[in-house]
Amino acid sequence: MRFRIRGRLYAGFSVLVVVGLIMAAVAIWNLWAVQGQMARLSALSDNTARVQEISINLQALRRANLRYIYDANEPAFKEAAEREGATVELLKDAAKSTVSEERLKIYNGLIGDVEKMKSLRESMGTAVNETAKGKAVLLAGGDELTANSGKLVDAARETGDTSVTAPVADLESKILLVRVANWRFLAVRDAKGPATFRTNVDRAQQALKSLQEAGLPDEVKVAFGPIKSSLSAYKAAFETTSAAILQADEIYRNSIAPLIGESVDKLKMAETGLKADRAGPGCLDSAPLDLSGFLPGYAERGALRFCRCVGRA
Image (cartoon, rainbow, N blue to C red):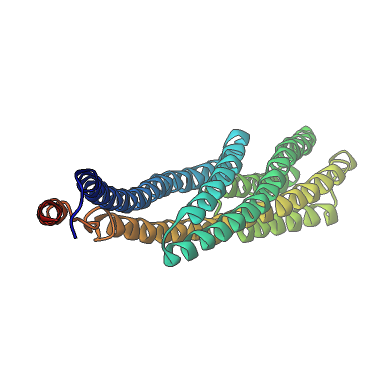
């Protein structure tokens, strides 16, 4: 079968077009493969940045909560709330773009942990608010107790009788020990502090009761009532305040701080997985379909053979 010149030209150009289309298809295939790998690498890089930012937020949460529990610093409380919200959003974004089921579980678990931190922080905030109110009551109540004790001491001194001034001075010292126990607890926040305070209150109340039963002058006895009342109010304020302080400390030390520590450890696991995936065979080092060396030679030989056949036809 012989072809005319026109047919030969058409056939030759057709071969070139077909070869070009095949090479273009291979190039597109390679581009798709590279694009997929780049998208995966981009997702891993974005999540690595998110994980680092989440870690910073968790450390900031620890500091903000600790500052608030001791100073009742409202900006610190607000900062903690903002950090929690930002962390949850970052975790949700990381969960949406992750390529690992294991890390997806970690991110979803951390979202629950941060929500729990928020609930614990709010409970701690309630206790800290009660503490602030209680401290104000204790300050005013302590001043009132000291003033009433001073009136009793002045009345006893005016009698000029050592049998009156001596037991009154003893009562005054016991009342001062009550206030010292309160100050020590507020400074140290020792769990044994309330027991020490109650012991000193009991001793002061017992000394006051003994003085009330003694045959003291009326001008001295008249000061007993205000002291008894202010001492009882001081004790009640301390009980409320100390309970709030211990509750806030317990929430932070036994719940919030350990939870933050566990969350940081989980985040380190996710970060390790991200680094492993970025360095693994799935990112840009698994070569896409490469026929660049094969196709040109094959196409050239095939085209020459076809042209010879056409030329002979």
